[in-house]
Amino acid sequence: MKTLVLIRHAKSSWENLEQSDFERPLNERGKKDAPEMAERIKERGVKPDLIVSSPAKRAKKTARYFAEEFDINKEDIFLVDRLYEAGTDDYEEVIRALPNKHEVVFLFAHNPTITSFANTLTNVRIDDMPTCSAFAASAEVNSWKDFLESSERKFLFFDYPKNPLG
Image (cartoon, rainbow, N blue to C red; front, side, top):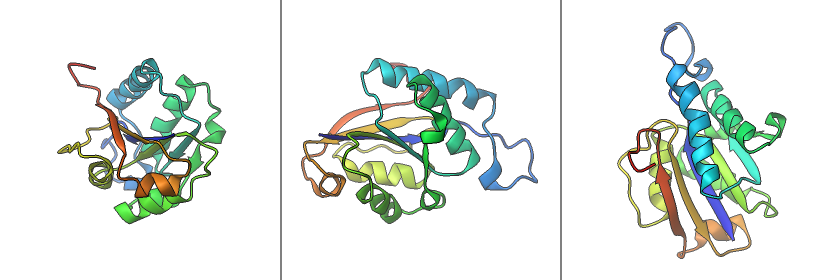
């Protein structure tokens, strides 16, 4: 079985307007939300075999908070340039290229594409993935290529920091 958890980066800072979009760091709320969301996902019993992230500073830092919660070395986070300023076709290519030995992959990236891509995975539709939200789907397949081609992908959960049910 393959499980994909899409995670939008935590809230970023707009304090320095001279800073490039790529270099924007997390703000204080983002630094609080990321470890809390990692813990909530861990409580669901979902643990990544692989963490894949956009190389943008805010996505990479969010991924590091999750890695810490799951006792994964931050150097083991796989940074994929293609996930920054990506389209849904880029997400598909990244997923197709995942090593099949990994059963559970956490993928950290950006809106609006992460929301659009989440809406292609199952029959569950969301209007927007808030910062640090997570959308998870699984399929009874042996390869990541088959995961994308499966018509039997199952929605697992959608959670976000301000979720009253979280």
